[in-house]
Image (tube, rainbow, N blue to C red; front, side, top):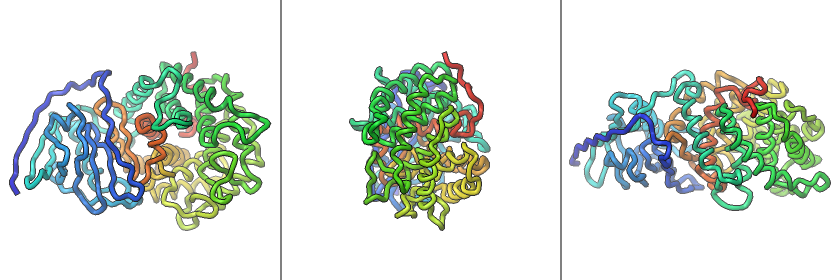
Length: 476
């Protein structure tokens, strides 16, 4: 094959303009895992991987981004990174980020920290191999030992919080992927992400998010009718945000709303411990344990705010969680009727966090953390979503086993690098299969919230990340 050498030198300032619009990858939801689309970090481009292949197909190039300026083109196949051919990609969830994604992420991190900041790639373009040297935005590298506690990570969280504050609508919501009630669930995570930034300047935006959740969702709760009110997903996420807000600011003005959410969740636990999306139990009464574990985390955090847990509801729900544990992996499955599941992190992580916050069942907490660490490749797969797997998975690990948390976080540095945009915020990076749940919430808001909360898990401020100090953000 012919070889064409292309060297493109583009000068970019160290500081990105605050008005720069972050690149949004063009993603295809592949429910069967036939293809896997993902962002190419600060290159401002979208790549595609296929099972067994070791080249990245370039699907889209952002206008005037590093890839565009550096000569990368749609249809190119990245076959060599820093002169090295990556290992093949596998669509297996257990393989995690192994292969081309890890190779590209490491190369990007090193290139951005080098002088000059340049990335070397070889691409197959038609019948020729084209060598590219692409200038990339300058930035420091993550600290290897603690990738979520270094200066780069702190700036990453701050940039995400700035982005979320800037894209919040006047109503307090963020634009979801679809209509309906997706904006309530997404707003709870976005508010939590801004809270994790530990900056009182974001408090007005956080309160707007809380007020939106309250008006659209919580205010519909009828204490006399369990069938009325928000879906359990919303009630749990809203309660988690309200509890963490009260613990962070010592502002108890929303405690009544927190209690309403927690009471509703307790009232919807059936006699045999099952829970569903709403008051009805799906799958012929089998239920969804992902709802149970989020309710437990909400109750555990609310208890720190002065809420009295309904012990009967807690015990019945915990009994259902126990029956849903897969004996071989030690992780929590889909339900008591389907204990095996490849997407274990959200259920297992949320329950580990809930029990650890209450200092309850230490042996079970250890079992859950061991399962999360042993199957860390599955961290971003959870109920047609990546977000809650990563958010709750890392929260559970941090509370249960700090060393395992650090070890797994190091393995997920490539994810953080490939999400990072040249504008400083995060692009959405989903799992290898169905990402319809996150698409429903809106890729941009939930993608940014996910990365911020992953990074924040190492900070230890939020109580779901091991925080114990109350009032750690002054409330105006």
